[in-house]
Amino acid sequence: MWKQLQMGLRAFLLIASRVWTCLCYTLKKQTRAIIQHQSVKYDIFPLSPLSRHRLSIVKRKVLVLDLDETLIHSHHDGVVRQTVRPGTPPDFVLKVTIDRHPVRFFVHKRPHVDFFLDIVSQWYELVVFTASMEIYGAAVADKLDAGRGILQRRFYRQHCTPELGSYTKDLCVIGSDLSSVFILDNSPGAYRAYPDNAIPIKSWFSDPTDIALLNLLPVLDALRFTADVRSVLSRNLHLHRLCHVSKYPANFSSRMGEQSQNNSDNIVAQLEEFEYAPRGMTIIDSSNANVHSRLPQRM
Image 1 (cartoon, helix red, strand yellow):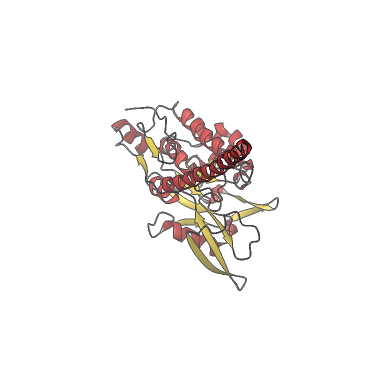
Image 2: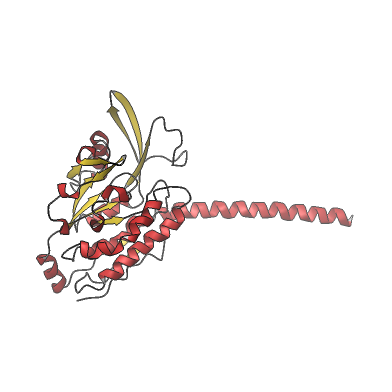
């Protein structure tokens, strides 16, 4: 009788433990889904007279944006091994014809990309530079622009240079004054000739909790006040090697997420050494309460 009672109690505890584990997993999953759709806020305070004067005497900068794995991720018909979880709906579908064959691309937008573009388009002239074919890249850029007219200048594969089995991007086609041009790209090989004009970012494939674009907003807010972007970006060359590892979607994603946060922290810390910077900004991301800028309060 006693043994039967013990066995029954053990079975009950085992079942209760499994039910509790299942409930916790479901609750965390639902919480992440809710957090993902909560609002994101980046407070832009009015500039002081000194900051406005600084902006008036420096040239307006050009921010060059890569597409695939930087702002979006896509896969097409016939892909055997997808990097997106099966059943995840795309943000939009593109139907293009390549070599007389119709191809459908299922495109997923990186979290917060629309908000990111809204903000940085106020600070910079935006240029799209992708190694993809024009028929695909132009369609993606049109969707991201959404009629706002913020992604008017575009460069495609034909503007790249084939090198070592990949494509490099010549920033000189954007403008001759490289002190005011820099690129945001997940592939260090794409800007290997211009490491002093680049901000690395980890590759994005499907993580719905990714906040890499949000982490960059304080950096980009301050960088527009510098006379030469290379004076800041050249001091972070080691980060390009770190982000090269993050091109792989599997084993490195969590570690590279930390590196991306450290990237923003390091560059912001360096910008604090300059005399001019925007007044203190706060970025509130409801999916990560630790994302705050540390820009100095300046008049």
